Image 1 (tube, rainbow, N blue to C red):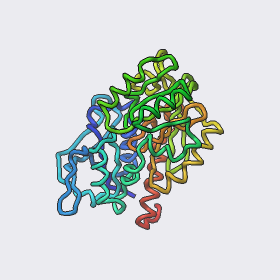
Image 2 (cartoon, rainbow, N blue to C red):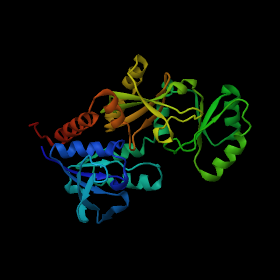
Image 3 (cartoon, rainbow, N blue to C red):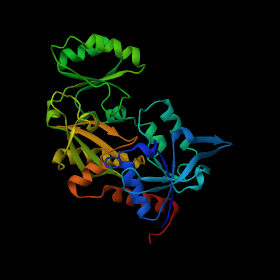
Image 4 (cartoon, rainbow, N blue to C red):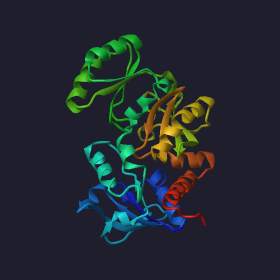
Length: 321
């Protein structure tokens, strides 16, 4: 089966080919004989009910400094593609939300992964709130009285923007910290949305585990250990990737959320687990494939393409070769 695949992402020319998950998804698709097209979200155009992208043919290779060849731009009717990978990075802002609305004009006839409507309905720090029994104590609000009451109850807290990403704007407020009110004033100036406040989970010093789920099933994990003096474990701010196994609690969490992910067409999901708690469900542009592959000797992009191809066959009643 040869598929025509569009990849909606940020500029491929500047990615880190040793870390980027979209890159290995493209490599695997190419190895399977699928044809690739690359375009940016800003290249989308909706005209007379048809969704187009100013796209370019794409070839990829694992060669630093020469990892991608792009053809000449062409106006491509995305309804003529078989699959579109929705892979641009957050922030999850109105530009991102608009792209999900546009992609609904081709999905599900053209299979968009992840389902654009469900991506829009499942922002990382809000979707997880549907599973409160799996989370640390959490408050989402703009009400300072509520925030101060939550702090009095839990003392050691984390404060972060509701639609932030990559660890940006995450603050650890200790019981004796006098900066909470100043921080809230700053957040009010920067963000219009409520903020998220959680009880600090000290197990984060041992790592923040990223678990990859494919069509609702746990496939592998990597532990991200924060650097000394850093509250955030994100790899791009100094966190260290460490080999990790799935614990019984990890599997319990994955089993609890897996059916909801599969039902919603969220094929590629990365969840964050600290200690025994689920803290985020990442559906916009999950990462972690290459780190897990290196540490576990796996090839998670193959499992993802197996799932995508199976969904395509089921939707179009194509028999496997």
